[in-house]
Length: 354
Image (tube, rainbow, N blue to C red; front, side, top):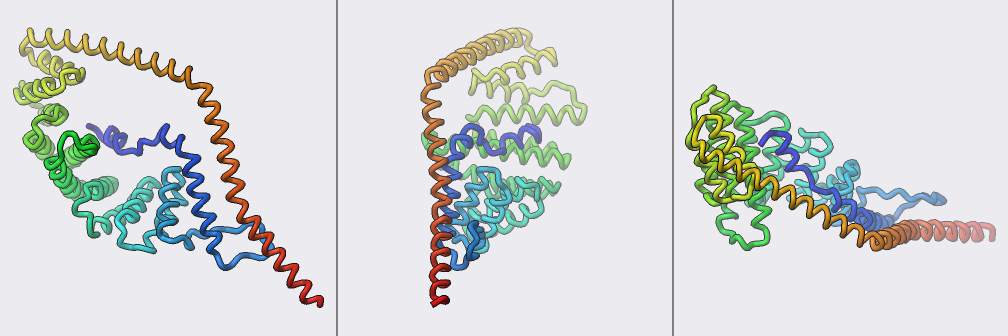
């Protein structure tokens, strides 16, 4: 797995989810900021526009505002909100890691690294694999590959312990396995950047021993061995590569890439011609089945989209009405405050005249 693919795997998967949540997130910000306005003790008399200072937010409100700003990719607001939250509670692991995440997303890797280092020293970080993974990414971002490998390894150990005690039926097991696999790839990539492909191979050798029934581990071991052999100019047939790919296919027989890679590797080294023909036939069948499944899925999606078009229009109108109501609600307190100030001023003027 290359750098671009790792980065893609790690990027927030917002897409449609974010677009659906925008009204709710805006409503959250509106509520938080409106609440803050009510708590302010000083306002400019006669000024119709009251500026809300994030520094006045409570910890809970600052954290909630930061999360909303972060989801909206409004990094200036997110940074100020999370900074306020951290100032309120300097040892809060979640606030500190979110602040670091936003620094990273905003292109400030040095600041992100400082926050991740602090987070890794807090209570609770020892069992939080994501903290160490993010720390590894931060080291990688400024080309501190050796430090990155140590952080990734810590994350892997935490994830592995959790997976070993978790049943396959557990609701979080899928996400945990994915996180474990991505961290392995990041660790192997870091070793590769250091020119230590032997250590990169060992990452997956250890992984297949720990999790022998995970197809991707065997596939990645084969891929890493091929990369190492190529780097040293070793063109000889590697039986471990073939065995690892065979194991991956056995565990996941419908994964076309596994089948195609084994067929290609055997053919390249003039090995097992009968098996190559069998694999190529299997790959063709899987590819045809995949195309058919994709077409069927597209048809179902189009039909669902057609059936739901009227409902979408109704929902769009409802969302528009809700947004207008929220905007009115956000402004109502300001109007009340301004009106109150005007009345107070009028009362003072009358008193002076008397």
